Image (cartoon, rainbow, N blue to C red; front, top):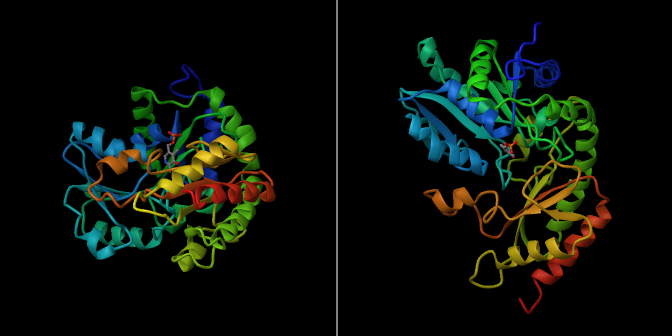
Length: 369
Ligand SMILES: *Cc1c(COP(=O)(O)O)cnc(C)c1O
């Protein structure tokens, strides 16, 4: 290849793209400056003015804001649905619908969407449509990564992911990727060239050299600790609800065990835990905020921060932090629970993490509060 200008093509980035495409079983990959620039490229190359996107009713906050605040300016409309209810979402499909978009597990409470089931419905819809009107299934695979779930194997057309999270893994570099059929490659490159959200080679390098080669070993270790923490939380009477796909109590256990698999075929329930505390009075979320505040100021091993998938354990309050765009604008104010807490488990020792969680529970739920 002849490399004339970084924004067009560059060898470190293309090695990363080839590796990521191989990992997801995709025909091609295009890397972007961030997860959000990858998501905007995937959406804008699949839909244009006058067309329509069907998306899940809970999404990563910035994706929600992109669909709600920006794409309508360019004539792209969207409808939020619940992809767990086929009859309901199928009723929202329009002749001009071109994209079905969701994350699974869904951020932040980790309910799952059955990729094979949604893709099969879309396949049946597409069978009635001419080629230029086909709907694409786009899945955000940031939470599981290719290590723990490969949506293309279940019938999705396109995978988007933030490399800033588990793939980068060390919290040092932003990045994003679109993994797509070959027919989209030229358009994705053209979009990236002109909108400019290109992954710099200096960010591609650590993701390629440190992030990807350690991905599986990090995630396996983090997952083992996550199961322990989820079991600890579930056993505490002050905790009202714990959602972790690896718990026996997980409501979609059968789907989790089918869909979330690593390359050896082992169940890969992930490194995120969502939980809610029992609230003492009518002020919802008070104990949850106390809990987070205590951790922020006093914990030994847990950091309060909005990212996830890092080697450091991170905790946050979705209602006021990552999902504030949804809490203030969605039609259904109950989509994000004010008492919910999201924990992203890192590589610290499980005993240290449990000690921090126990101390925070004592303080947040003490009689005085
Ligand atoms: C972080 C995240 C994004 C956005 O990625 P950036 O790299 O921060 O732009 C998109 N989707 C999900 C599920 C995420 O967690």
